[in-house]
Image 1 (cartoon, one colour):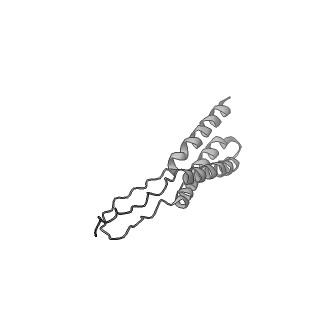
Image 2: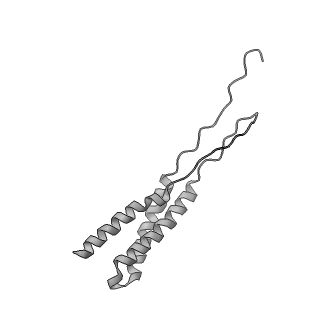
Image 3: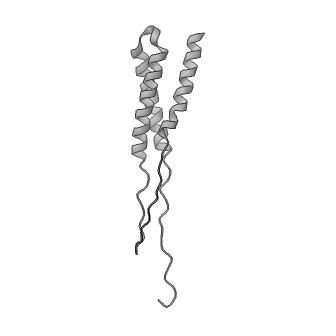
Length: 111
């Protein structure tokens, strides 16, 4: 019974670990240009790697703790695989779309 309870806690912790994959993209630049410039958008690859690493680490730790009675390695391996895959997918999916391109208004008539 306690094993199912601890496993349930581990599953909830793994699904809650997607917060590690959240993006902190912000842009606060002030630039004066004469041509439209599109700033580089967020990088979904970096978010996928960050989420995968964080998920794998947390999954391995939780898997190890849950399977201590039979040995840490099997649970850590399964937890790292599940956490890493989930973190990578959620990291890539949580990437916001790139900001819209800014086009300056057309010149006034007679210019």
